[in-house]
Length: 134
Ligand SMILES: [Zn+2]
Image (cartoon, rainbow, N blue to C red; front, side):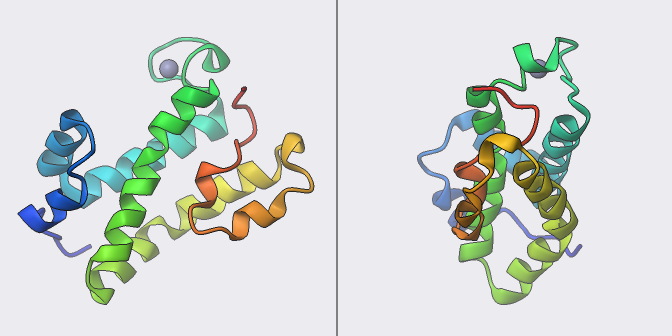
């Protein structure tokens, strides 16, 4: 992936986001966001908490998951605001992660009949994946 410099214009897109997020974005750039998204989806898929706790008592609680998955929202903000070339790069890079993520949501029995949510713009904000509890 070509380097996408984190300009002040990009940081301005996240002016309301927490400082620790902006610092991390400045430090690790777009590849860091993509890696974080991959790690979160891997953790859901494997029911694995990186803090060493029982998944459903830590990262697998809905508010923790929604907090973590805001990284996908951040990627969407970049996709919606960067040049077509840069956006397409990001879309390509995260496509395989999105597919696994969507499947985890589709396979979650509590979501049966709610598939229309997956057609929405920010589909990851509406439904929980398998293994994440309310
Ligand atoms: Zn955890």
